[in-house]
Structure formats: structure tokens, C-alpha cells
Amino acid sequence: MSKILLSIGHGYSARAIACGLIGDGWTIYATTRSVEQARVLQGEGVIPIIWPDTDLTPFITKATHIVSSVAPDEHGDAVLNAYSDEIAAQKDRLEWVGYLSTTGVYGDHDGGWVDEETPLNPTTQRGKYRQAAEQEWQTLGLPLVIFRLAGIYGVGRGPFSKLRAGTARCIVKKNQVFSRIHVDDIAQVVIASMRNPDAGNVFNVCDDDAAPPQDVIAYGAKLLGIPAPIPEDFETADMRPMARSFYAESKRVRNDRIKRALGVTLKFPDYKTGLQALLKTETAPE
Image 1 (spheres, rainbow, N blue to C red):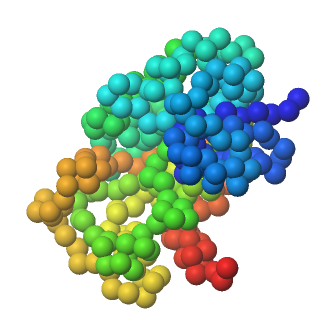
Image 2 (cartoon, rainbow, N blue to C red):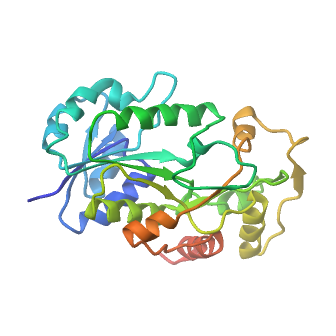
């Protein structure tokens, strides 16, 4: 039977997932808001859908797999607001449904460890929206797998451009650590789940090395052979509220389950290997 993926909110992570499936003969329908972006996606081998302008019902009824990357807001999850009944009606036919969430649902643990069994206690509004969306997806009775993603980086999303431009900042806050994940590892985790569906599971998707943000910036600068930005104390640093909010939570996220249940070996198990690979990609001759 042919595999058909409907990717709703086909952004950075979803594009990496699609890239890993195209060569295996998948048909991939992918939503975007932009006509220009639709042309880009078409060039990547997927069939673009301009949404919300287009009714997704026909694509929901033909898909064997669905993945949603759409971030919820104060109005809830836009996908479920519009199509919860249509998606739920396919629950006995769909082989797999994935929802890309965030480790922000765990809240602040002052640098302590969390795993998939840790009670959810988000402190940011973004995390609260995600927790509500997770719960709403879980009520539909789907063959659902939730992926809680750590901070995403990869080609086009790394510290090098800001370091080169002199706009990178080295904000230091006591006990502050972040978990991260390379976009290529997100793709391999999600694809492994699609190949071995385990409905109801939840996976933390992060690397092995939660680290202070200033260490990552300093290592990036070292790779470029330039001075690291001068450290700034978080308490006195001039930061916009959105930027400051990213420092509201600190935790180390365990990833044992993706290795044990999905057999995943991370391509980039820490930020150092990830940044080394990014720099090689950026400086490789075209």
C-alpha cells in the first residue's frame, strides 16, 4: 500500500522529515501559507497546499499518515479548531499521527532532569498552549505519537551568522541550561516512529548534552576563530520580553526512550559535533 503523508504546517522540521521520506516513494502533501514557499516546496518533491485557503478534508481522508507542526496560540490549535471531527473520523484508517510539541511543557526544573513521565507544569504561555494542544490531540482516539522537541538548530539555524555579524550575545544566568536537537536528528526520530508505530507514546527529542547557552556561543566563536561576545549578566542585560522569556525555564531532558524504543543513534549527540558539521556545510564549496 502506498504511503501518503499530510504535513500540516510544513516548516523547518517537517521539511527535514519529508526529505528523509521522498526517496522511499512517499507521496507528501504539505501546507504553507505562501505561494512563493509553495514553489520552493514543489521543488523539494512535495505537493504544496495553500492553507488555510484550501479545504484539507480531501487530503485528510486520503492520508495514511499525518504530522502537525502548527504552533497553538491563545485561540487554541488551528488544525483541531478546523478539522478535529474530520481527523477523528479517520482514526481507524490512519496508520500514524504525529504531533510536534516542545519540552517547554515540563516547565522549570532549575537545571534538574526531566523525562517523559515528569508531570507537565509549563510556566510560559507558549508552554501552556502546547500542553493544552497535546491534551486535545490525545482525546481524539488517534494512533498518536507526541514528540517533545528541544531547541532546534541545523543548516540555516545556528550561531554562526550572528557571530559573524557581531550580533550574538553571551547571556549568563546561574544554573541555566538548555537541551538542543539537530533538525536531522528530529527527522530520523520521527521517521523511525512512522516505520514502527507505537500509538500513545511520547518521545523527548533532544541530544545528550544539555548545556549553558554561553558555552554554545563560545564554542561557535572558537570554531570561527573569533573572540566570543563579552558575557552579560541576565539580571541586568537589556533584553526584549520575548528574548527574556526563553530564560524562564532551565532543565536537562532525558532522551533514553528514543534510543530504547526506536533504536535511534543520534547523528549529533552534542552541540559540539553539531556545530562542527554545520560549519563544514556552510563553508563547503557549491
